[in-house]
Length: 394
Image (cartoon, rainbow, N blue to C red; front, side, top):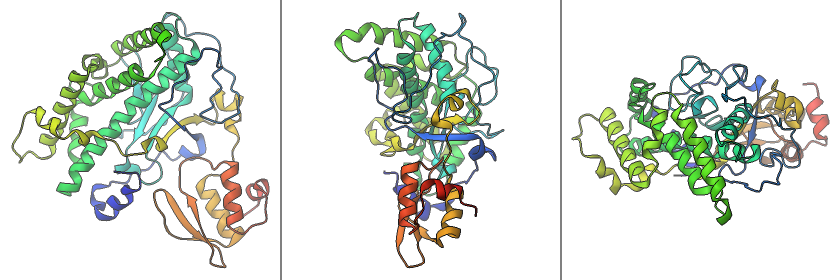
């Protein structure tokens, strides 16, 4: 299953989608910055944490101070508030939590069943990741540098949210054969019932999935074993302090226990949504290994989220705004006389100029960068610079 297949799924099975909206101030308050390779790990100590995967060539000032002795997390740092909405991977904007904030207070997943085609995907809140990296540096007893802890934290949080995507993709495969809302019905109902308890296996497996990502990808050079051990020790210490459900992750880090528990999780959800079908033991899912494959190229839907008023946005060029989609669309209509004519593949729309020339316009979250804007302006037939196009009154 590929990202573009979601358009086919929506066309053929619109009943399995339940549209939800992002908070009203989402686009006004937040910058969305794509992460090119969320699974990459840079372990060279001499490299400064310059966020090359955020904005190449833009250096970012990093605070040198480690977390305080108890590795507390700031109550002031922000994360989008979805109110009382509950679904696997939902951002947790409110505490306090027993122990430390769980992974979904640092990153979150917006399912395509609710947020297709524009907003679905994985989001890592950059300022919260800073706090997480500070804590991991402390939990490693100073063995990890801030740069290394930042990459460990990014990989762990990505892996956690990627499992929520994997669970959704599993439900989608059942929807293709049974053809009724399985994810928004049974999967969500079960999650709501067990969330906040030790019975919430999805959160345990998600954190285990993140831990396993770090274990297999971070510090793989022969002389990095000390760093790798320190990274895993730091994550173990963090996971043990997490709320119920999340903190069970360390029970499932071996290949066998992870596979067995994932199979039990699959059977539990299957029984919840299809109680009329005879139950089987969890091992039946071992014969269906691709049931847990995520959508290909999901890495193209991973982003940093930066609050426009955060210290990071103020200290860097990340706060430099160009245009959001709705602003771009308004200018294309009024300045060039262009109109959208149809939905293209994936998250693209096809627009047409007055003389009939057609060109694609991405419908993606966040601001359009300068290079992409210049290309769209040219295709729209306008002889304007990016700054002239952005500053034009419409």
